[in-house]
Length: 136
Image (cartoon, rainbow, N blue to C red; front, side):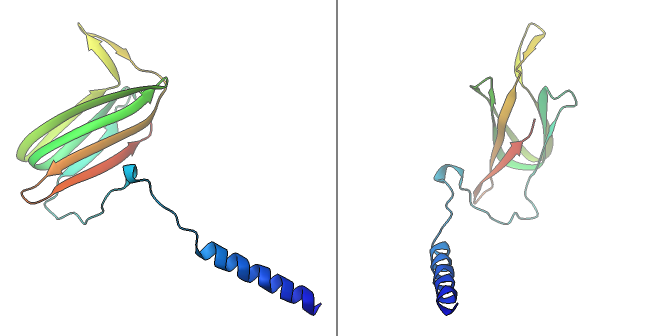
Protein backbone atom coordinates (compact mmCIF):
# COMPACT_ATOMS: atom_id res chain seq x y z
CA UNK A 1 0.00 0.00 0.00
CA UNK A 2 2.85 2.34 0.86
CA UNK A 3 4.55 1.66 -2.52
CA UNK A 4 1.27 2.33 -4.34
CA UNK A 5 0.93 5.64 -2.52
CA UNK A 6 4.55 6.59 -3.39
CA UNK A 7 4.00 5.60 -7.02
CA UNK A 8 0.84 7.73 -7.30
CA UNK A 9 2.58 10.62 -5.56
CA UNK A 10 5.47 10.54 -8.09
CA UNK A 11 3.05 10.39 -11.03
CA UNK A 12 1.14 13.35 -9.61
CA UNK A 13 4.38 15.28 -9.08
CA UNK A 14 5.58 14.45 -12.61
CA UNK A 15 2.30 15.63 -14.16
CA UNK A 16 2.33 18.78 -12.06
CA UNK A 17 5.85 19.69 -13.22
CA UNK A 18 5.09 18.82 -16.85
CA UNK A 19 1.88 20.90 -16.93
CA UNK A 20 3.59 23.95 -15.40
CA UNK A 21 5.95 24.20 -18.39
CA UNK A 22 3.20 24.27 -21.05
CA UNK A 23 2.92 27.72 -22.56
CA UNK A 24 0.17 28.95 -24.89
CA UNK A 25 1.23 31.32 -27.65
CA UNK A 26 -0.71 33.57 -29.98
CA UNK A 27 0.34 33.56 -33.60
CA UNK A 28 1.97 36.89 -34.58
CA UNK A 29 -0.66 37.46 -37.26
CA UNK A 30 -3.38 37.79 -34.64
CA UNK A 31 -1.52 39.65 -31.93
CA UNK A 32 -2.71 43.09 -31.08
CA UNK A 33 -1.73 45.51 -28.39
CA UNK A 34 -4.32 46.29 -25.81
CA UNK A 35 -4.43 49.85 -24.65
CA UNK A 36 -7.05 51.65 -22.68
CA UNK A 37 -9.01 53.94 -24.92
CA UNK A 38 -9.21 57.57 -23.85
CA UNK A 39 -12.61 59.15 -23.43
CA UNK A 40 -12.15 61.02 -26.72
CA UNK A 41 -11.77 57.73 -28.64
CA UNK A 42 -13.93 57.13 -31.67
CA UNK A 43 -16.93 54.84 -31.41
CA UNK A 44 -17.18 51.94 -33.86
CA UNK A 45 -20.46 50.00 -33.98
CA UNK A 46 -20.76 47.27 -36.66
CA UNK A 47 -24.20 45.71 -37.16
CA UNK A 48 -25.62 43.31 -39.76
CA UNK A 49 -28.48 44.57 -41.89
CA UNK A 50 -31.86 43.04 -41.13
CA UNK A 51 -31.73 40.95 -44.33
CA UNK A 52 -28.13 39.84 -43.48
CA UNK A 53 -26.91 40.88 -46.94
CA UNK A 54 -24.80 43.77 -45.73
CA UNK A 55 -23.02 45.36 -42.78
CA UNK A 56 -23.74 48.79 -41.33
CA UNK A 57 -20.84 50.44 -39.54
CA UNK A 58 -21.58 53.50 -37.43
CA UNK A 59 -18.60 55.70 -36.56
CA UNK A 60 -18.89 58.43 -33.96
CA UNK A 61 -16.51 61.07 -32.63
CA UNK A 62 -14.24 60.75 -35.69
CA UNK A 63 -10.99 62.66 -35.39
CA UNK A 64 -8.37 62.36 -38.11
CA UNK A 65 -8.13 59.47 -40.57
CA UNK A 66 -10.14 56.27 -40.17
CA UNK A 67 -9.71 53.34 -42.54
CA UNK A 68 -11.51 50.02 -42.50
CA UNK A 69 -11.15 46.63 -44.18
CA UNK A 70 -13.78 43.87 -44.16
CA UNK A 71 -12.61 40.33 -44.97
CA UNK A 72 -14.81 37.27 -45.47
CA UNK A 73 -15.00 33.97 -47.30
CA UNK A 74 -17.76 32.89 -49.63
CA UNK A 75 -17.74 29.42 -51.15
CA UNK A 76 -14.02 29.11 -50.19
CA UNK A 77 -13.16 32.32 -52.06
CA UNK A 78 -11.66 35.32 -50.24
CA UNK A 79 -13.53 38.60 -50.56
CA UNK A 80 -12.81 42.03 -49.12
CA UNK A 81 -13.91 45.64 -49.03
CA UNK A 82 -11.98 48.67 -47.82
CA UNK A 83 -12.66 52.34 -47.32
CA UNK A 84 -11.69 55.41 -45.37
CA UNK A 85 -13.24 58.40 -43.63
CA UNK A 86 -11.84 61.78 -42.66
CA UNK A 87 -13.57 63.93 -40.15
CA UNK A 88 -13.36 66.07 -37.08
CA UNK A 89 -15.82 65.16 -34.36
CA UNK A 90 -18.32 63.94 -36.92
CA UNK A 91 -20.55 60.89 -37.12
CA UNK A 92 -20.62 58.71 -40.24
CA UNK A 93 -22.35 55.49 -41.32
CA UNK A 94 -21.06 53.13 -43.98
CA UNK A 95 -23.04 50.33 -45.59
CA UNK A 96 -21.07 47.43 -47.04
CA UNK A 97 -22.97 44.96 -49.22
CA UNK A 98 -21.92 41.31 -49.38
CA UNK A 99 -21.89 41.09 -53.17
CA UNK A 100 -21.65 43.25 -56.27
CA UNK A 101 -24.05 45.73 -57.82
CA UNK A 102 -24.17 47.00 -61.40
CA UNK A 103 -26.88 49.05 -63.13
CA UNK A 104 -29.08 48.77 -60.06
CA UNK A 105 -28.98 44.95 -59.99
CA UNK A 106 -27.20 43.35 -57.03
CA UNK A 107 -25.87 39.80 -56.83
CA UNK A 108 -25.28 38.79 -53.23
CA UNK A 109 -22.68 36.30 -52.06
CA UNK A 110 -23.84 33.10 -50.39
CA UNK A 111 -22.31 30.80 -47.75
CA UNK A 112 -20.45 33.66 -46.06
CA UNK A 113 -18.20 32.80 -43.12
CA UNK A 114 -15.02 33.87 -41.29
CA UNK A 115 -15.89 37.59 -41.44
CA UNK A 116 -13.50 40.07 -39.83
CA UNK A 117 -13.53 43.86 -39.69
CA UNK A 118 -10.32 45.80 -39.01
CA UNK A 119 -10.53 49.53 -38.29
CA UNK A 120 -7.37 51.65 -38.09
CA UNK A 121 -7.51 55.19 -36.83
CA UNK A 122 -4.87 57.70 -35.91
CA UNK A 123 -4.78 60.54 -33.50
CA UNK A 124 -2.12 63.22 -33.37
CA UNK A 125 0.23 60.97 -31.39
CA UNK A 126 -0.82 57.34 -31.88
CA UNK A 127 -2.19 54.88 -34.40
CA UNK A 128 -4.70 52.28 -33.19
CA UNK A 129 -6.18 49.11 -34.61
CA UNK A 130 -9.49 47.54 -33.56
CA UNK A 131 -10.59 44.14 -34.78
CA UNK A 132 -14.11 42.73 -34.85
CA UNK A 133 -15.27 39.22 -35.67
CA UNK A 134 -18.70 39.33 -37.32
CA UNK A 135 -20.99 36.30 -37.08
CA UNK A 136 -23.23 35.95 -40.10
